[in-house]
Image 1 (cartoon, helix red, strand yellow):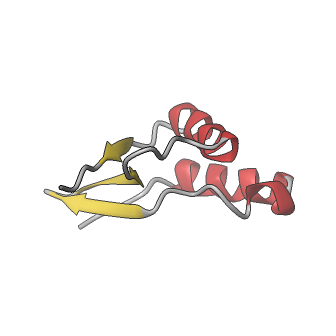
Image 2 (cartoon, one colour; image 1 turned 30 degrees about the vertical axis):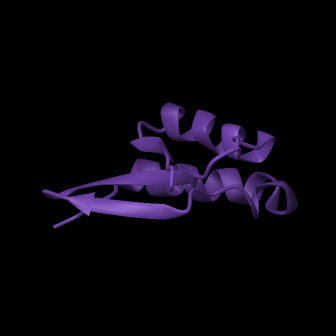
Amino acid sequence: MYTISYQQLAGLFEVILEDIRAYRAGQPDVIAFKNGDFMWCEVKGPGDKLQHNQKRWMKHFERLNISYHVCYVNHR
């Protein structure tokens, strides 16, 4: 079973409600689940870089102890 703590979920909603316009974008692309745990993942292709609003979300993930990762992909 995958769970997010009440504190984490409440913290995410507090972030959004703090400024709905500012936080309606920038959330990661994917939530990955494995072995009863989860991780938010931002996917970046060649030449793509993190935007300011994505970095803001990552600071909140760190504060709320939510796992996240930036996945850089290459294709040839």
